[in-house]
Image 1 (cartoon, helix red, strand yellow):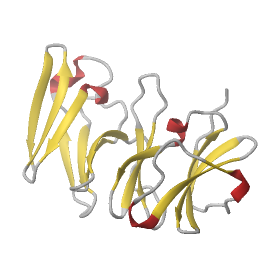
Image 2 (image 1 turned 90 degrees about the vertical axis):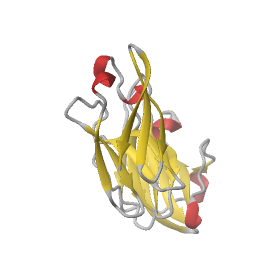
Image 3 (image 1 turned 30 degrees about the vertical axis):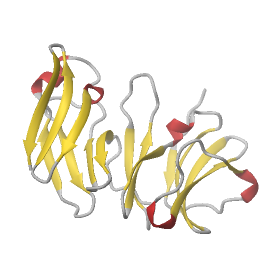
Length: 192
């Protein structure tokens, strides 16, 4: 099966006869929404506000799972996280989309860890398979400030590093992650 995934900032008009229901949330803060369109060979996601199409967000071969096409992982005031899940134990790739323009602010290969919609923070890795030199990034979506945080050393004792982070807790002064190691569940605190 051929897989085609792409994005475009110059969206094509969306024909109403090709619009389909989508199994994930499509309503975003600020009057924005996501629309699914399917043609003979591809399926597409579009970012819209009212009747205006802002951008084509992604496309895949027709018949691919919608989670590969993308779903909303977090909805912030001016941005949202579009998550792509390809299964087979792969990390969930993400894009941080500017609602006004449809542009992605993150580098290709960025991967989901967690988000706090209320505080408008995104925790992610720039590498979907991080190594000991990589860092987690805690991004304040509202202010644009980034905190670069080292992964705990013992998280690399096994495969699928990003899946080993089970939960996070964020306060004004600290981020605490809970992660799984060969010796069990551990926590690590980062002062901000």
